[in-house]
Length: 396
Ligand code: AMP
Image (cartoon, rainbow, N blue to C red; front, side, top):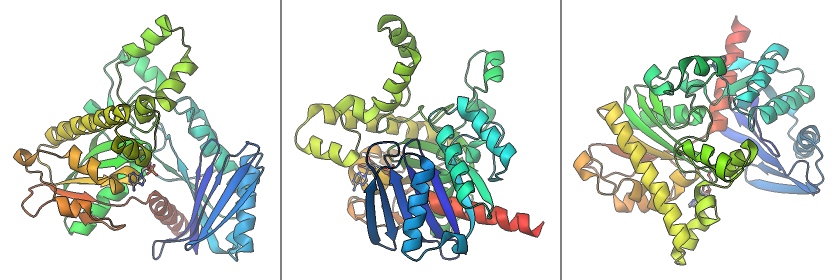
């Protein structure tokens, strides 16, 4: 049996059918441009790709088209899937482990939408739609915030009025937890060591850093929302909150306009017009100074976090790069860790330049801190968490 993993966004649904025994994806796909005049469904069956372009009015229709395409290709989800795992971005204070979905749980996830207005509503929609289409199997919510639930109070607390913070659930939650947990476990498995002090850098369209001591995170760069921290594709990351007040007062921008600015028109895109890292690198090679500055700001912020987390951990064993940029952009890895031999960090130029889809060490043999590239696999992590929960529930 397999697990269906669903990651539902505002206008797209990503899904993967995962065989948890061997960790492979039986099928994966993407439904995108939901609600637009022409949508797209892409299906990948072990490297065999097919695509359909048609109007997809809503999430329900999108998922149904994808399921029909799978059935046409011989994958009957009703027969082959034992449970569905859903990625849910915000678990608030309430959810900090994978949770079986029932109506009450779904309602609570929906109530957390005030903390994640861009993410939780489409997550809820995805669960509703999948529950309707696969009503006979358990559905499990796996939360992006869960791994960071036990952050030390000093790292989780904003220095603002404590009553207001308590009243409105304002604290640092952290995100990308499934990836940080999975990658940090992969590092220990790959190196055959445990109890490591690790820094994990998840650098994709969204980006976050975490400091992990013996399996438990002690700090992470994202906060109340996934806006805090590193410079991202379209998000600003850390910014003086005074900027928000200034824009409100001087530019007459309302809250939604500022939200849109910081979430969608900032980061690499705000600085250079481009959020895709490959395209940015090309523009740098072509001599574009805006693109160069965007890259420099990105790397500067990254180094700042690495430095801070080294100090917080006191002793550092590993630094690991993951996600689209982290796994592929050798220059970012080299620049983020340049000239740190005084701190026991030495990237090997040749190892760093080699391309691979597998976990690998890119530091020199003399480097006291081991630097690695480890591909993330959030779908597999969600599938495994779902499988484990369903098995335990069945045994109970
Ligand atoms: P993710 O969110 O993990 O899918 O990462 C997406 C980001 O990874 C985009 O900015 C891509 O441009 C970037 N990326 C993917 N492949 C490469 C590559 N070969 N070199 C540089 N950046 C890449």
